[in-house]
View 1 (cartoon, one colour):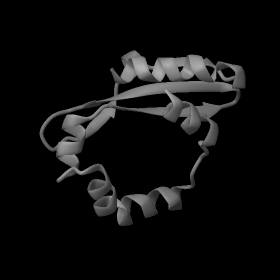
View 2 (cartoon, rainbow, N blue to C red; view 1 turned 90 degrees about the horizontal axis):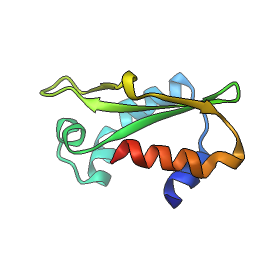
View 3 (cartoon, one colour; view 1 turned 180 degrees about the vertical axis):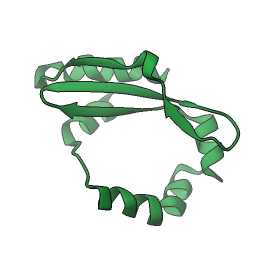
View 4 (cartoon, rainbow, N blue to C red; view 1 turned 90 degrees about the vertical axis):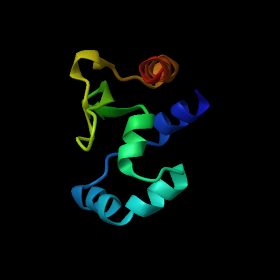
Length: 101
């Protein structure tokens, strides 16, 4: 939970160009760092969620593996929206851990 709390505290929005840079140049580095042979393997063997803070609201959306080479997609049925508050970091971290387990 410490890592999730720190991630929530340090998170920020990135621009489209930053996201594109990560996608285009970071693929091999990311897979190597995660010790995964491919994105298919990564998606199949992991869980993830997207956390967006906007207008005093936080949206936590888990992602699910679609199988084969289809990648991942948001699991909108499990999305949680709550009021953002610095006093709710622990509650948000618990929600993330529950979604990822």
